[in-house]
View 1: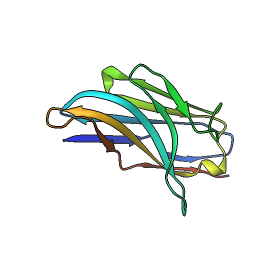
View 2: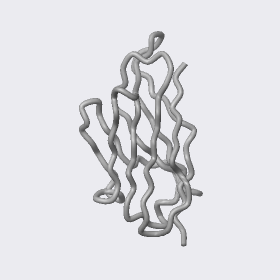
View 3: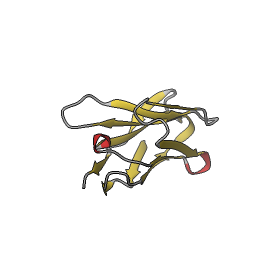
View 4: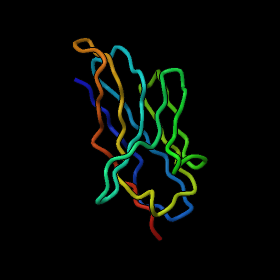
Length: 120
């Protein structure tokens, strides 16, 4: 019905940059807030950043000034530009979206995630 597919993860050195992408597809009528979450090994999932349909953003304190979330409504996509990366940014990053479809309104959907490893 609805799929969210992330891409762009990989291995990066400390201080480096990565850009994550997430594209939504399916019988979508409207996408409200989109966001990125991450889960490090042995830790609970945490919010990284969110962006509303009119591009208002929020960030976790740990990524403020380093990460930037953006979206392309026409392409039903959300992006996460990650700069000045640190080893503690290592995690599986998943995107999330609050969506109306032709059969159901106001439901959260999740992607399967993409692994980001920050290591020298």
